[in-house]
Image 1 (tube, rainbow over the protein chains, first blue to last red):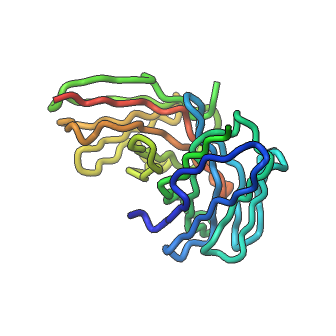
Image 2 (cartoon, each protein chain N blue to C red):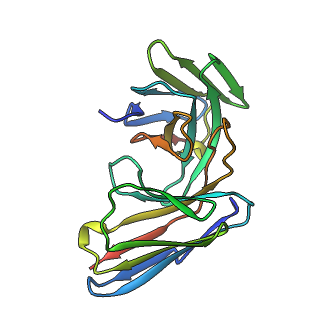
Length: 115
Length: 111
């Protein structure tokens, strides 16, 4: 257990569905991240939240909508996805201090299939 | 090419042998980290080396860093079947909030 829990572990959805991915961290960290991992591609950073404030949005399509209600919880709301959005979605958290290293702790991921 | 590119892309060795993976990057870094990912799971942090360090050890892991060549290597000694996983380097430029990961090396350790 890494202290970062993602649910669900697997999700199959149609292109017209709306679903949400959930991430919870029990590590007292102040930053949370969403990554997309597709086969044979580098890990793609999607969103970053620092103290609940979004600090990065890496040109992610609007069909992905993040929500961070507090420093321990992060959601990724999905709607009208495309088949190419099928991937492993990873959540991570870290404790950021000025000048310190960013060591990230990852959840086990949600394997998403869009039909 | 990407910031943080590992080579080889895939490596297959026998149990007990050493495995060496390399990472090249492009920009100046604050530190470089190595992570492991078992199939279909999240990444796990293994080791961090700072830009002013040249070598670091942790158990059977040895990491080197050459900032003049912008490269790092990860050596796993006396490999075990349980080391079978993908290994990623990640560069931290110190700007906060952003690690850049490479494409990874898939290591298979056979009995």
